[in-house]
Image 1: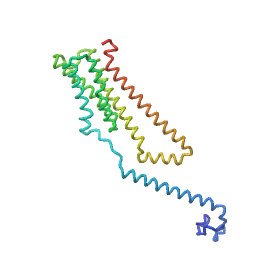
Image 2: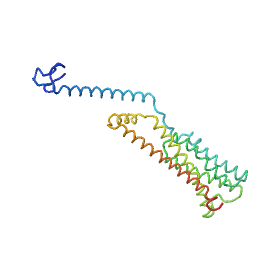
Image 3: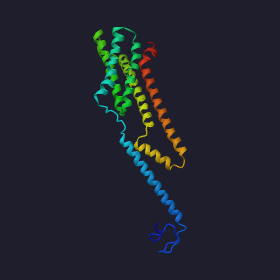
Image 4: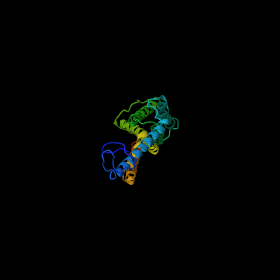
Length: 254
């Protein structure tokens, strides 16, 4: 060991420095504790480096870029085509009550949006794309009716414009509900699997925190708040979708 006063090399068993003659028996326990702490820090640094190496060796799956052709065809264009096909089948071929069309229109967009947001992270972009899908779907349905009944494609008065907007909004909110549910599922998966710096940060917090129970309770509370917020958002968009799509039948008496 080194003498803390003159930095000379002395024996580990020495009680006094032979060079500066200072007493060492009072400071030796403190030096031993410092050395023990340094060894523990080195072990922790080595463990963190090994964990980082393991995580780097197995890269986390990356979300598919939002502009890929597969996403547009399978998860955006497909529900649009299904909505148009459902409209033609229910109103033109089978000539059923349009209530059935409204109910089907509430169900078609949701699963496609859910699958999309489980792979995607650009929620605002796809939210806007969902309402654009809804507007195109209703416009396409109006085009079919125009060809069959020889009427104008666009609404002719305020009442028709309101119905046009309500129907498009119901489809858009259905797509939004699927996006919210998909994002909730993806966030839950991300929370289960530790990821790089986040996992290491939680380990350091747990090691340095004097109250490990408090740290765990805080993490569980934050996770619970996020789940409740996502659930309320999904319920709100679903309620808006149902209200805007069906109020013409129940709110105004059919």
